[in-house]
Length: 159
Image (cartoon, rainbow, N blue to C red):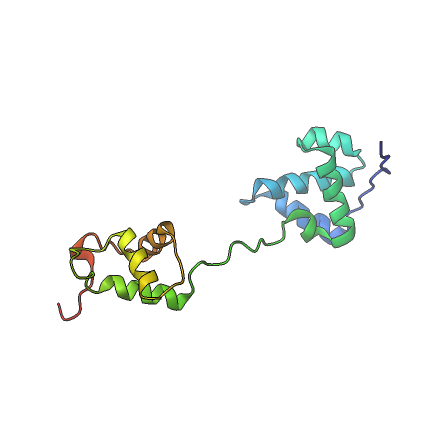
């Protein structure tokens, strides 16, 4: 079993004022408020286990909040680092070429574009190496295109 040293957090005056602002009002994410409460209780001299039971976080989480304050400051203790997220599947040029294709006439023998047909044609015309139906569906929804409804498709030469 690992023994932990007692965590003593002493907030600097500007940090206490910022913490009071966070706790004093305004809309804040719950995570931020819980972390601010934990820091406030730690500053008052309460133990990690007391703070954990008051704020309803695990002792490990409270200890980590205190450690992040001591090492990196208030911003890192209260807020998460930005997450990178997934990279876009289609590049802007690919998106534009697919949209332009959908705005044109469907292939010979087809009455209208379907999501499956857009996927097949995009790969066949080498607009993209490969793409899934859901990616195409989301692209069309995002740009408010409904090629299966002929009246919504922009046709060249019509007014």
